[in-house]
Amino acid sequence: MSRLAEVKVSDASMDTMRYACRVVEMKKEYVLKSETVRALRGVTFDVPEGDYVAIMGPSGSGKSTLLNMLGCLDKPTSGSLFLGKDDVAKMDDDQLASIRSQRIGFVFQAYNLIQQLTVVENIQVPLFYQGRPLSKEQQTRSLDLAKMVGLGQRLDHRPTQLSGGQQQRVAIARSLVNDPYFILADEPTGNLDSRTTEEILQLFEKLNNEGRTIILVTHEDEVSKRAKRVIRLKDGLLQWDRLNTQEVRDAAAKYAIENMPVEV
Ligand SMILES: Nc1ncnc2c1ncn2[C@@H]1O[C@H](COP(=O)(O)OP(=O)(O)OP(=O)(O)O)[C@@H](O)[C@H]1O
Ligand SMILES: [Mg+2]
Image (cartoon, rainbow, N blue to C red; front, side):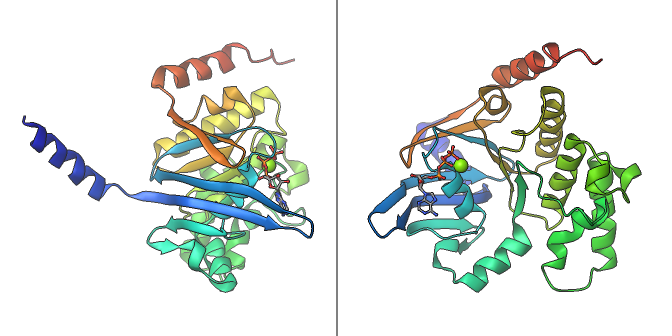
């Protein structure tokens, strides 16, 4: 094949590649009385649909700031953030709120479930924010999601009746109920023991294999090795962006299982 033909093939694949998000020269400054904090100083990367990205970096490097932008909780000071065709950086607060409730799925370290609600009601919470009565289809979808995360037998349980891992699985099902661009997870295994961490990482792997895009922040190397790709931030800049080989991912999964504490 000639060089020209090769180039054409890759151009064509670029055109058909679909992105969960595209971040272009994104900056975020927090203006305080005494100083301006430059939390993100020009970050550029793409996340193709179906990717699984771990964001790492030292404390203060801008990880949570980046996650807040991706989650439409706040907007960049300059640069662009494309979700689909829309540039979030150009939206007003109402548009941000609407995109957040309709297309963003969050998973937090502390689960953030509502104690008074059942498993299935917690999964439906993002739909209530959309301000419409639930359709039959949405009700079926929330039940299917509960089953998918292995909680089909516990639909009417409340969070206090569930283990930490089960609560995090409710949070993951909740994050999927509005068919998000991506699951956005901030230290999702930070509160979990190693066995439960493994349970959640296996669930992420299953969801990713089914085509879900996952972006998570973690401090743990062993968690980042399970992702397809690792982005490291330093001082508000992208320090590096690397793919994990399948060997690295498999070895990390094997290591986790072999070093699991014995159940007592
Ligand atoms: N709302 C805010 N107002 C002012 N400064 C902020 C605000 N949020 C974050 N910062 C500053 O921006 C920088 C990046 O903070 P960020 O929370 O994104 O770091 P991080 O990488 O998530 O750190 P950690 O690992 O400790 O959670 C820090 O210097 C922080 O003090
Ligand atoms: Mg943080």
